[in-house]
Image (cartoon, rainbow, N blue to C red):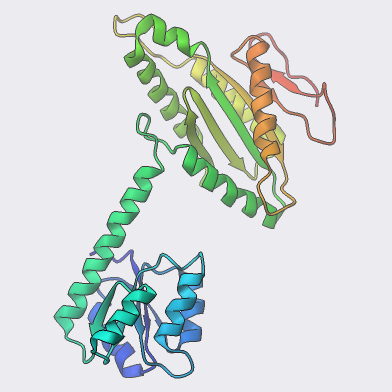
Length: 320
C-alpha cells in the first residue's frame, strides 16, 4: 500500500494512539488527535484519506465528531472507521447510520486492523483514479472542461489572495471542419491530439493549465501573468503551431493554425466572474474575423472599445 495516503487516528488514550501508530506506520502517513476538537481541526487542515475515530471520548464523542464531519463540505467525503469496545448491534447500527464505513473492535487484533485499513485505502485509491479519469478528455488525454471549471476557481482565489493577475486564453483550430471534410475525422482527431500535446508542452510552469474545452477549442490559464506576458506567450504558441509538422494519411503536409483570444484580470471578489472568459471568447471571435492565425487581446476594463492588441501575419501589435 502506498505511503502517500494519510490516516487520521483519533483516540483519547495515548496507549491506543501509540499502538495504532506501530501497526500502521509503514502503511501510510499518520496524523494523531487526542480528542474531538483536535480531530475536526486536523481533518479540515490535513484532509486525510481515512479517519480512525474512537467512539467513546470525553467532551465530544465519536458520534458527535462524525456528525460535524458530515456537515462540512470539506470533510464529508472522508471515510470514517469507528474504533470502539462497544460491540452491540445497536451501537454498530448507530455508527453506520451516521456515515461510518466500518468498525474496528478493541482490543486491537493487528492483522484485522491492517487488513481493514488497507481495504479502505484501496477503495480510496480506486476513487482517486476514477476522479482523475473523469477530469481528462478521452481523445487528447489533457484535462477537460470540468477540470477547467475547478482549476479556474482555485487559481482565481489564489490570485485574489496575493493580488496577482490571472490571464485566460481561448484557442481555436482554424478551418477545422474543412480538415474533417477533406481528410476524414481520423485525421481531424490526429490534429486535435497534436495541438493538445503542443499546448501541454507550452505550459510548463507549475500553475499553468491547459484543457480541451470542447470540439476544436482549448483554454489556457496563466495565473500570475499579466496581459503583456500572456499576449507574448499566446503569440509564441500561435507561431509554434503554424510551423508544427503534421502529415495526412497520404503523406501530404497539413498546415494547422490557431486563432487565439485572451484577457487578463486581477480578481477582487471571491466568486469567479464570467467576464474574464467572455472577454477572451469575444477576442477569439475578433481574431477569427481579422483573418485567423491571429492573437487578439481584450483591453483592460478601465480602457474602452478600440484598445485591443492584435498579432499575426502582417499584423503589428496595436497599442493598448
